[in-house]
Length: 326
Image (cartoon, rainbow, N blue to C red):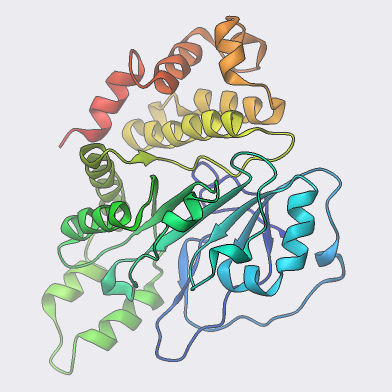
């Protein structure tokens, strides 16, 4: 088990990963690395470090791929027994009965990746069976350039709903030039493809990613799907604390995307991380009007948190309206 630094800690605040990436099947496309949010086209070298099998002294949040979960089930059981939270990336078939029984609500969360078909994505695995075992299940919507990209994102959200997802986490893929050249060379043919060349090499990919995230939000709102990661919880950080913190982190990122250098997202981010570190129950703090005992909860942050957690009100409604505006 290794400590990791996710490319988007505001979207996926996990701290460790168990096991390496899955093997890349020749001719089967790339393997998604959700830590770097990119496709890996060649299997990495596999080696186990000395400390990989030790149980941490304090519970941590662990990311594990389906292949590694099947292979490391005994170690997963020890992690669950120690109070760690487990985020399972369902990127391969896995029997639901194989996973250990959660000790408390939200300890094990299942996240099925959706990659655009243009980039070799496969259908989303059914998720109902995981939810029946008290494991929140959702879809990691990987956003990238593709022909008719907005239609593909909407199709991805619909597929997530049909698979039984109860939440969607939308995140842009990192697509370096070598990946774009790989895709172009494999699809353009000898005569070339001007439209494909424009898409992959002459498009503002950063702006497209923002536009696709906003389109995913509109689709989720229409279909009634929640956004953001609701867990995993640990024995020290209950699911209510994690979910409340993750919601503020999500909107901190969105404020940064909307407002750039003038963003107040840093205020939400500071308060969210302080809440996560405190492990305090946000519901109890709200009832007692004690949110400001957590560092960073200024009057504006407190008002935003209250309205965001309750599903409406100012100033959250104003930011939401700007985010989903066409």
